[in-house]
Length: 185
Image (tube, rainbow, N blue to C red; front, side, top):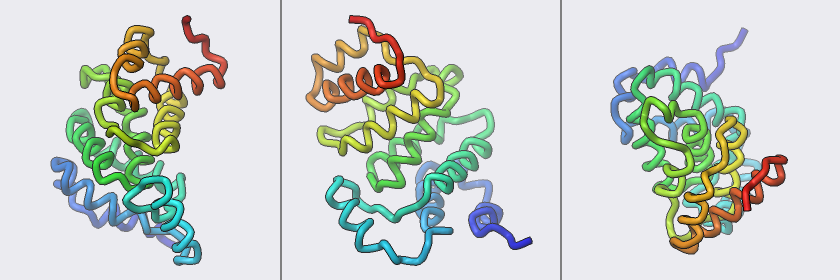
């Protein structure tokens, strides 16, 4: 049975990287192209990424991104604070894969032990201008993870805040409604 290149890469990575969000950001950036089919679609992913407002788009399959997220969550152990900082770094670097990985982490962190919540962290990480796809992807991951929609108070705060926060509120309400969740008036 052939060894999986992504597993081999993770096995060769020092466990010490899990104490540094900067090092983890470099490790995951190097992991993104592993297993991605040869650059057949490279010009397309470059154009799509640029048009969407991403700093890069490598075409990493969702399955690989989920495996990377699983590796990060498993190796974080009981202390996920480094992952909170990693999410911020990934969102700032703003590659398509970075945003997708940040969404997976955001949705699956142990927010109770961290004293945080997915929605507040999402709003804190977004910039004045974001691709709608990035927001929708993150919202869908958070809802898929079984998190409840934000409180009415938080939604109203977003509506009264920055324009992007108002857009976030509308997208959350829309996504929740499409999933059959009841949103208060």
